[in-house]
Image (cartoon, rainbow, N blue to C red; front, side):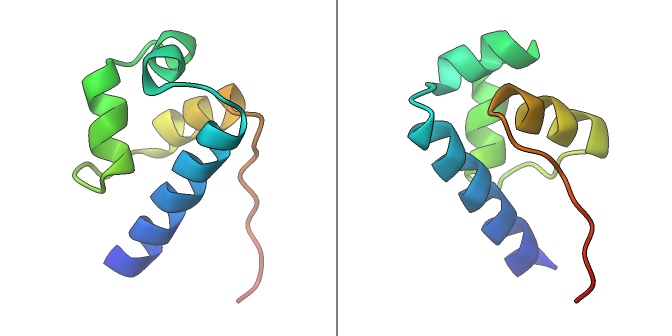
Length: 68
């Protein structure tokens, strides 16, 4: 499960960087502290679905459930 979280946060961080959005800007867009964004991207914090949706919306991504 930890590997899945690492993969997910890596994808989110990469998408943020591709959009040229800084952690500070993402924090402003989501209403979350920049330190929180940093900890999420470093795998320190596990996020709930509401926060995940906020982050995805802010970087132009969506959450999709698919079969394994």
